[in-house]
Length: 467
Image (cartoon, rainbow, N blue to C red; front, side, top):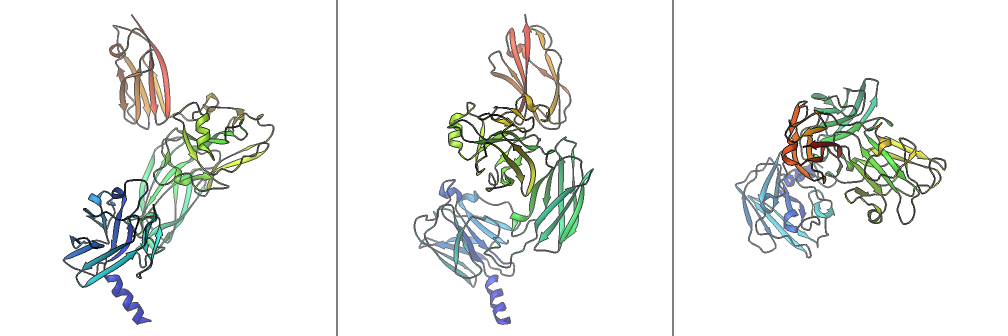
């Protein structure tokens, strides 16, 4: 047994290919393909050579890091600790045939023969042997499902509980017995600021977050070879008091309109769709980078293609997701952020008459896809306060002045009588000052409009310019 472990440590000391991604689907091949080599700090050499098939080998100064990542022009170079990047140069990875790769450095060598690639999948090495499996790409970090002896200290589990004036957060680390945990939170509803702090935690950890309402919480530990579990963002909210809410349900629309549900983000923070789902079925509604913006509404449906044909407003955001079949006479819909239920709605045959949709917050019939109607104003917190010096101006008189108070950045726009934007000004968060709007310079006598926007939330106020 000791002999086998000794051989394993020798193999691990030599650099080895661990991942090769030859056929991306979302971008041109050369923009997305990469080769990843796992290094070992116990091995040293002056140079490293990589070759594919019978092409001239690529030479590099020996990388001083945990991983050597090769892509075209370093276009995909991950900004992670321990990752060193190199250029694939003229190499074009084959996506319709087999390929052979070789690595040579000092007394170490590695040789790999790969099968025909599959679009969107990367070849990942299992252990230190010669078996390669197709899976989702993991650029710059290790996959614990295949790689052995990875250095990992991540966030395994987080739970929370509301206790009056604070949230009690508890969780567990994976791969280590303790580390420094950085946490940052922000009150969302209402917005009262937030806090950034760090603490030394053990395998099991817990701490208090002082906030009565919903909170956006970000947790972070140091980067390591498995980066996917080094950070976690979550929404601390109770059902009925969440900024992420169900604002319209159409459970029995007229044919050929498919069933749909409207979701609204009433906060000043983008919320990731990769954490949002229908609690009772299906997967999350997006991948990394997909989000629902501040004060933005999205429509969720099984058939977005058919729904798009029925929606008059072309800029409404649609999400295709498995939401099941909504019962026409009596049913329910629950909205989850991760594993936590943040909002839910119920209906029966007395709620509204089919084919009407309804707003579960008011219980009234509503058909305002993609935006919040009048009935929504009492539960939708506005992200700013504003005041105009006057709504009637003289052509040769003083400028209009507008005061905006907001915790977030706001855009102030001037529209002419036709509704076209003729002037704009970005107002930083917490400015709370008066801003001059040059109405007389950009509009004629008659009607004009001031539009104030924050995220997807906007207010339009009419003004009049007299001779």
